[in-house]
Every structure is written in C-alpha cells, then in structure tokens.
Image 1 (tube, rainbow, N blue to C red):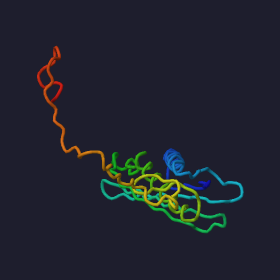
Image 2 (cartoon, rainbow, N blue to C red):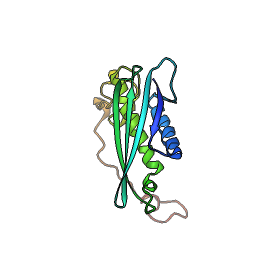
Image 3 (tube, rainbow, N blue to C red):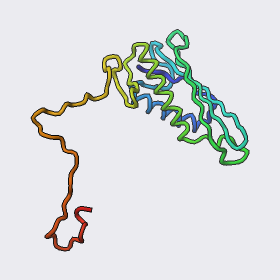
Image 4 (cartoon, rainbow, N blue to C red):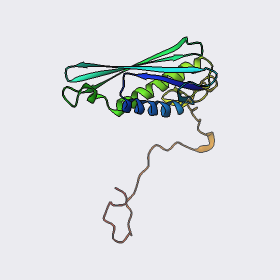
Length: 177
C-alpha cells in the first residue's frame, strides 16, 4: 500500500534525506510505497519524531513513528533506539551515522509490514529470517526431508582420496591435500 510520509521532525535536512531514502528503499522491499507529502484520497500516513539524548561520551537517538489511517486515527506506533559514540566533543549529533539511520529505517519498514499484514494489506513480512510475500498461505517454509530410495544401496559414510600419481610437475600431496 502507499504510505504518505508527511512529517519527519528532529533531524537536520541532510539526515532527514538519508532516513527518508532509506525508509523508502526498505519499505519498497516489503511492497510498501513511501511517498512524500499527502496522497490523493487520504489513505495511510506516517510521521516521525527523532530525539537525541547525550549521556557522557555517547548519545541515544530515539525514533518514534506513527502510522495513521485516513481519519487520522493512530494505527501503529514504532519506536527504535540507536546508541552511538560522540565523535566530536560538544557535538552530540556527530554520533548519528547514516548506518544508524539505515537500521532505524529497516526496523521501521519491518514493523510496518507486519502491522499492515495484520490489517489485510498485501505486504512482504519476515518469517524465520526470510522475506515472505503471503504469510497467510505459506504455512511452514521449512523444506521437507527427503526419504532415501529403498533400492539406492547402502548410504555412503566416508570417502577416501588416494594419492594421485603420474602428473608432471605436481608436488606430492598437491592434488589430494
């Protein structure tokens, strides 16, 4: 489904751009279209609030996203904390890296996909560490064990590699070691 990104507060323009692009990419992997600004006919909207708290030489970036339906009711809230070391004394925002923003975007997209799937939207969700586009009908994705054929003979328990001779220029053990 398309989701309108209507607001991202608490970040500089450059960091807002990074998180917006990362969120659009991560959500796209899960069949969620993130578009900036309002969409025609209302639909779903997303707003984010970022807050940085310094504690000594490290800082914690807290991202809180709210997904709302077309009437403005909150459908889901996603929060994620990332901790980083302050690289430049007196500048706590130096702890916020693009990699942190990427992790926040990935977590947010995963959470949104799971919530939207429970609401009946067709999204790609994560099951057993892999992405699945239709979690309702997949059941178990673990492969079934194959039974050996009865006439296949005895199972191979070990393989021996014997020395190879007759190769010019090869050192002993080079082909079998």
